[in-house]
Image (tube, rainbow, N blue to C red; front, side, top):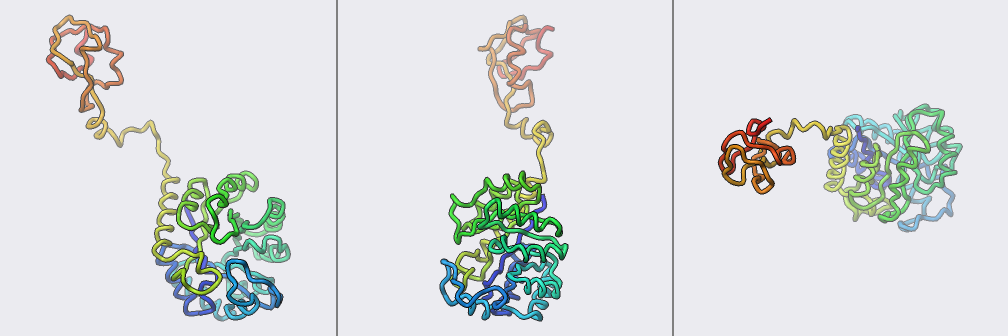
Length: 330
């Protein structure tokens, strides 16, 4: 099963274009196939009195977005850096104007963040681009998600991501059950936007059928900003990518339990054959206490002992003789 991993940079760059470029290189080196940013245009999306989220109170929201937003030319250059590192450039628009910028830049697909699920004008504009869309569901009810999916149906390939908008997300709130519910409800490709600390939630989601994974990446969790404290550091992110891809290979490689040909040598070494527990004379009738079960398993299988109970020996046999069908009268 082909897995796609999105390295969510978000605002980890803290407005530094240089950091943004280096984060692209880092994501690629760790194994991500997609690098995602957030395209903020402060005045287009935020009122002056908009509150900061509970997990980050560092500065007023409008000031924060003004300070950390990039210009159109910078976005073009970030896309170029993505291309140079052989990862897809992806971004979440937070306003109609941001969609216009990303269209000029030439974004290949769009991510709808959890807070924009009810922003139907934005969804409809993104759908008109006909580009692939990743829809996050972090704070939405089924009714809200149904409306969003309906608004995006005219767009390109739609992937719906189970997500819980809590930073960090507890094990009890991951919502693995929602993955199968989404599959049944929408019949679309399903992914997992991961706010859980560690690897286990994503690995479980992969086993349940998720094929797209989004995870925040940072140089260090000690960095300033709204995203770094709940992101994953490079060594862990590399293991995260490796684990998800390994699970994908497992899922695309079904095993036939009736095909034991790979185990012929091992079966002969580890399984048991039926052998004589004592020296027996021709004409002896086989009873249970005449039998023993010992390695190697290249003789008559221990599973067939019922087949020879009560049979008559047609020859003398020594103790530990490995029985064959030819040892008995027909």
